[in-house]
Length: 247
Image (cartoon, rainbow, N blue to C red; front, side, top):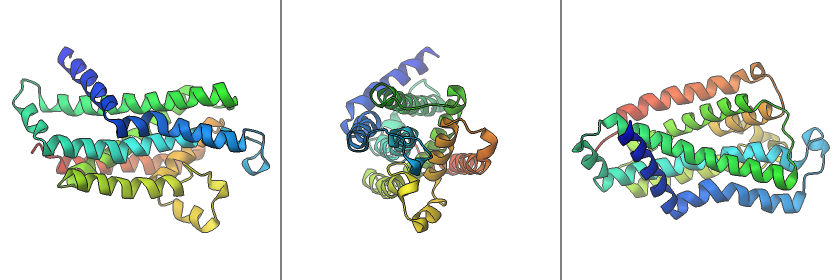
């Protein structure tokens, strides 16, 4: 366990030393919060059922952090470690193979959580964002959503033959999903046709689930989102397990 913990800490330090990954995980969502908060403020708006723009944006922006780590950081990191023979070297150490995988998942999860916590703290401190739900319930939804996208990320990383391919595929999947799912732009503002199409995007279900639980909805009101995310996690985990390569 001591070796596993050291590996987790090393992975987190390496993560923070990667400017692109650190920016999108820690800084991108807070920057959007400050930018759009300065434009729209957080006054109650009938469009959002009497809630302010930031009230609905903060739980949605959590989806941005999840998708950037899941579909950009993880595929690129996995493909890079394989291409530079880092994974092959791990096989020559006394560490068991599962230790690397667990450490990678945990370190990415901690960084995702750190980005989400920073976002929420800023939202509460600057715009007095309302929260009417249960923190433990929202945390469980966050964990489910994060692991589902991690499974997708490891699938992309496993299927991509090169780092460049992983980066391209990850961005092609992440950015359209980010702006069409309600994560970056509230679903209420999007045209009806886009809202209908957004139902087929996994990130839409992350946003809908998080926003619903954030305002105090019962989890039973979001069973569709829950089923979709659990299915995404299971299918992604099965495929990534089959496609993961050490070299």
